Image 1 (cartoon, rainbow, N blue to C red):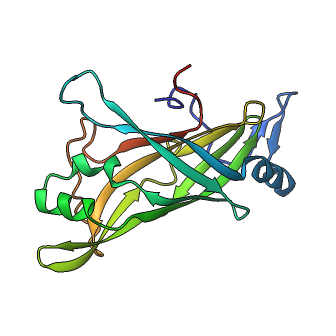
Image 2: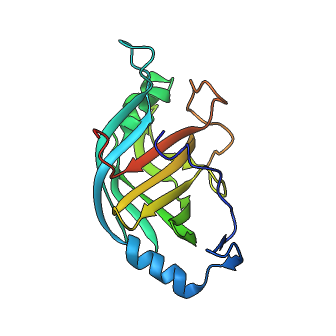
Amino acid sequence: MIICSVAAMCLTSCYYDSDNEYHEITPQEIGQCLTAVKGNYTGKLLFDLNNPNDPKDRTDTLDIAWSVTADTMFNIKEFPQAVFLDRIADPELKKAVEQAAPAPLIARLAFYQINPISFLVYPASVVYNIEYEGATHTASLAFWINTSYSYGLYDTTNKTFQMQLMGAGLYLDDNMSHSYLVNNEYDNSSFPIVFTNVNLNK
């Protein structure tokens, strides 16, 4: 998916310069990265979804808007439940999440390379208030963090932004021992979510 084919990335804030010398990214360079990346974006959200009419079609897309602010925060005002609804096996819970008011997704970007601009992503859970089994609950969509699979790239030449998150599970209230998401062919817990403003029709 889009940026999954990029080689595995280093987890430390460092890179090799044009002379192949080890270089730790400086606060000034981090500021330069942020200046280049911050702004408002529109693009596509790509996610895993089984197409009942075409078993080979495993990807769906949604139009999405996001922003990167001066405090290195990635922001989406309304994160769409459609990304993970089909992974909820409990019909009542699925309906409750679908009917919930939209909730924001906020993530911190940790820049570690300047050419191309590269960053790891530390997303907070998306928390929905739901009515389920006759009571009010919170349903939290959690993501994996501290992983090289949650990362992004920004091309300063083409002004293209691409970022991947890894969904981890859906949890009710404060119970983090049981996820309500199922049907993942790999490990029953992880699924990629990709943001891109690249023209996918090219």
